[in-house]
Structure formats: C-alpha cells, structure tokens
Image (cartoon, rainbow, N blue to C red; front, side, top):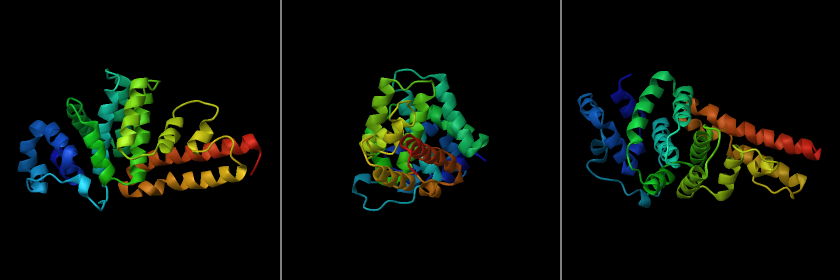
Length: 255
C-alpha cells in the first residue's frame, strides 16, 4: 500500500479544518506523490475553503482514518506535555498502532506521527474540530488511549495529567467521564466506584444501575463504526467496568 493511498483512502472529515492543515504540513515531501497519484489533498476536497466547524448542525460518520489521525495529533500533544519525549511513550504509540492496524499501516502512521510531532499544535482548535465531528463514544476511546500513552513510562506526570484534562474539556467530555477513565490507570481503594462513576455511599441498587449504565456507555459496539481494529481497545475499557462491578459485588456480598 502506497503512502498516498493510505492517506487518501482512510480520511473523511479530518481533511478539513485545523486537522487538515496539520496533515497538509506534515505530509511535506509527500505532496507531489499524492497529487501525481490522484489522491485528493485538502485544497481539492474543500475547493479552497476551510469549513466552519463551529456552525455545523450535523455530525458525519467518523471513519477509522479520522480517528487515527486525531489520535496521532493528540498523542503528540500529550507526549510533549512534560517537556520531554520518553522513548517508552513513543514505543507505546507504535505498538498500539501495530496492534490495531498491522505493521505496514502502523509504520506509515508512525511516519506521519513523527512529522506531526515537529509542529506547534493548537490544542483547542484541534479538539474543537474533533468534538464537532466525532461521536461521544469515540472521543471516550481517544481519552482512554491518551492515558495509556501517559502511563507507558510507568507514571502519569502532573504536566501530562493537566494536558489530558485540558483536552478532555475541549472535547466536551464530562469530568465524571474523565475521572472514570483516569481511575482505570491508577491503583486506589475506591477505583471501582470511580470507574462506575458513583460514590461509596450509594446503595446496592444504585451500584447495579450504575453498572448497567456504564456497560452500555463503554460497550465495544458503540465504536463498531470505526472498524474491527478498534474493538480491542474498546473491550479493554468494557472489561474494567465489569471487573469493577465484580469487585464491588464481592466487597459488599450481593449478587
């Protein structure tokens, strides 16, 4: 698969707006090859115009490539949050992409990632485009991945945590959802309750209700439109919800 075919065939809405500008700059020397191969570039798809994402009233279907590019850009922001780039974090990005997309596509994605990583990116502009164009379940999947990157070197630093929290706000993700996913990467006595977005003081009936709600929110089918390659990551979140519920069940002694 050529680089041009990979870029041109996998992207939908992310060819426009600030993300499209980042992709265009990152492609650099690949531009001539893309044009020669007949792959539409940002200017071709947008007819020379930038979309006003703040005025959109409908959300198009997010393609796997849109999610992929959004992930690469946000990963770059988080990795640079503490002023250094730990090789373990870079290796985590490459490995996760290899697991999701296979080695060939992962290598192309990582090549684009290295080019994106050299840019100064407006976190707010990128996140607002993603918020406008991507469904909530997919945005939660992005957040889960970002915590995984930050934790790849063994600890989530305060700088990384602040950056992820900022991204969360711009993405329109609630603080309760942020705390739920954050708890999946920390060891704490009340993590099971945080993952289910409840307090320890709630009744058994409320625990059961919260579990049903979270199982529905994090069910892998919610991101099925992104392709089978994203199912594993979604299943990881779903398993943690199940394990949290089972932990509380055992702790409280109810069925």
